Image 1 (cartoon, one colour):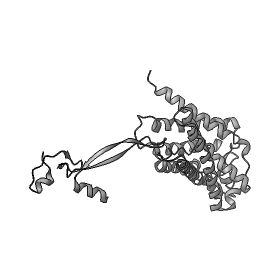
Image 2 (cartoon, each protein chain N blue to C red; image 1 turned 135 degrees about the vertical axis):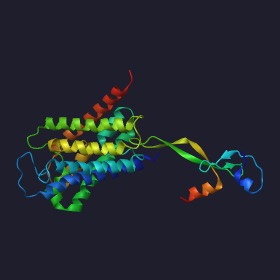
Image 3 (cartoon, rainbow over the protein chains, first blue to last red; image 1 turned 120 degrees about the horizontal axis):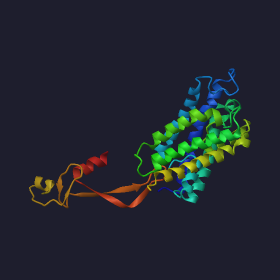
Image 4 (cartoon, each protein chain N blue to C red; image 1 turned 30 degrees about the vertical axis):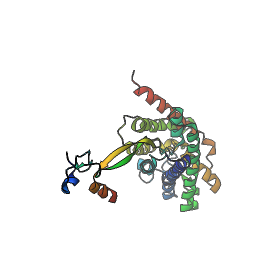
Length: 247
Length: 69
């Protein structure tokens, strides 16, 4: 096994890529429709180009990056690129405490680096119009509804990780495809509810970069993207183990 | 079984191994033993190299061909 430093570097790079391409796709969609009138307040612009297809495109940007990172760094660090996954595996006793802490720190800083890299690639409009793809409940959605959506979304993600990767009986080699497409599917559906973070690091990066660069302030709702994903992932990890355990 | 390479040289030597690639019988002088690393684990956990290795017997021709890949 490579050193914890190298594995943390892999988590940093993986999460940076996730936020650059995934959250970047959300910001880019908002920039593409800037100035257009939306049909209702529930539609903030993502949906003007192709309805739910806009969210599918954003979901695929996330999902394809997740898949790429899993097949690149999966054997190196485990390619969690999501604190909720690292914490859930730790809670199940499958991942050491020191590694979990190092991974989470690397993921948070990687996400911030991804957001800053996207902002510097695109310019001020990425921050002022796109908000760097930061997450917040959509108009008409309460924080509790957004929290529930995050719990359910991350529940599905972790359930697939458990079934397609952690389970020793899983068919080898397919986890990256299954998990990448699952991420895309989750984002397509809950994107317009909570922003579909399902990852505390993915929300952390744009939130801090927006604060630094003068974008929207979403700090007040960040707790949703900590509590929701971690709760959903932990429920899935323990429930899966209970379901597959032979009586 | 006899060593194929020795037979080509007109010698009669008993084979002690078989090349895993071409199936050639080999004597101790012509068998090349390689140690394949074994790894366990993988996504979503880091892979670990296990202390045991897997022996792989090759003839000189296959050994050279694989080394060039």
